[in-house]
Image (cartoon, rainbow, N blue to C red):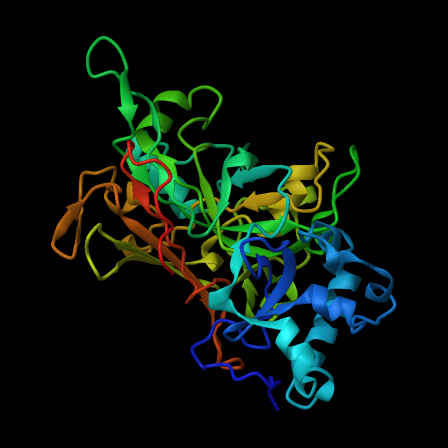
Length: 433
């Protein structure tokens, strides 16, 4: 019999008791941030659960990890603590357990409506790395910029390529962004300077690091999953014109660092386990340090919608899936540490743009419009790249025959809202969710 919560959860909710994603929230504008898990239309305040003495297992019973303003301490405690917390929370929230169900006072304190709280970044992000792990995305970018002779570089099939991003500009879903300024390719004698003319989204997910590793001690690829706390949906906003002019020889800089958006809820690998699937066959076989005994991706459906400014309806522009990644999440983490680099709890490892094999599954406007040559029609408006006022929505969910309830990773119908403002507007109003 499927596990069921005493809290009513709508069949279309992305937050059933099988999910229980972690986030950090404020119950009011002046309140302290605290950890929580999402269940149906509510967030369970874990600081209240801990203060009530309900985390009474051998690991969490001695910890103050849920009395912190972020999840870093809990993340760093590792899989035994995560499993203990999941067991405790699923028991507390189950329909057959009276401890919370029948305690009206505690329910009032600990269960808060999602639409009444303010979501925060769930962790302190010390470092951020963005990978380039989709073969279809790599091929399409190569075809656009280098032509059909060698669309994918010789090194790409041997190692997960990445660059070190800017952690300070990672923001939570719903945060307004300003169109970045920078230099573009010269049209005459000198480079263009001004607001980006080719602002793009990138459909990504990201792994959140749990326990780190000591400097000089790599993580074995077959143990890497124990260093991943969970996944978020991510949009690594990109100014393609700025990026194209600056990226040789050292890679992305101002074309990327102006903003990266993540979803507020972290879905754990334990929750995603029913949706594990075989990763694509890698040819040539990876070097020994990247060779996995079990090579898995996750079957996570992803889609992107764009709502043009002053329009009511969003248009779905792409549907993709995390399972399309060539390099797995665990290979990415193991490769990151093979030189001795030390990861820390809360570090963010982006997958890179997740594109599928078909045109309707391409993961960014660069591919979907073939660098602006084939504009999209959105509710009667023509789009090459993002316009001021556009809202971009990224949705992710899992569903299979064994679990007919969606298991998603997002807040407010599993969606991001990003309002790209005219450059003279300032930060602007928050977009309604």
